[in-house]
Length: 185
Ligand SMILES: [Mg+2]
Image 1 (cartoon, protein in one colour):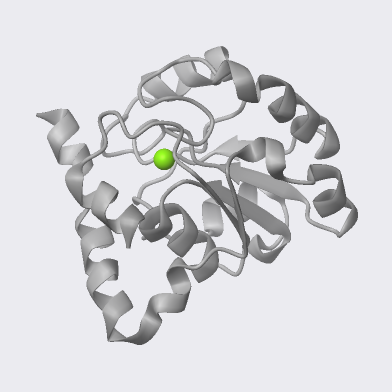
Image 2: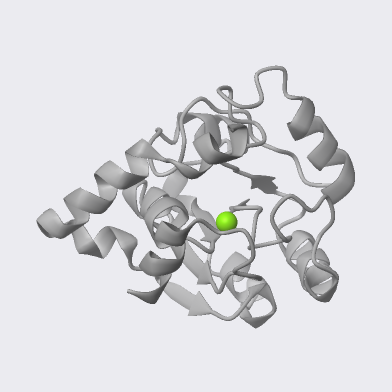
């Protein structure tokens, strides 16, 4: 049941409707790649970006997996080195007050992936950038949002003026039908 609730993202659905009211550009990433191995992280750091905000599921690991996808591990290490470790996971489950009120899941993930999980109160694409700006100590426009979903990760990043990087989902296993359909659009 919790999983079903997690799949229903009313803010996302609302945004989806508003997209067709003329805000389609919010769902367009600045950079689109097959996965994080195809991004020049050192170049982005040199261009002045100061921190990385990662979605977890299907971006760094398979949904519900507590380890980084093995084929992405060395690229993630390089990217963490380029940004001197300034990265967080911004998940719509772990660290989200509504689903993870005592931060248990967030702690588990932090231990397993070695990346801090941002505690926050609203689901992407809703929510402000205050928690992120406080964490990184810089404006959101100096941050890079990396994720596999156009209507949550990319729309969230674009709403806050971040550089947005879209990756292809690692797997379509366990994704709700609506998400699969939007991916095709
Ligand atoms: Mg995802």
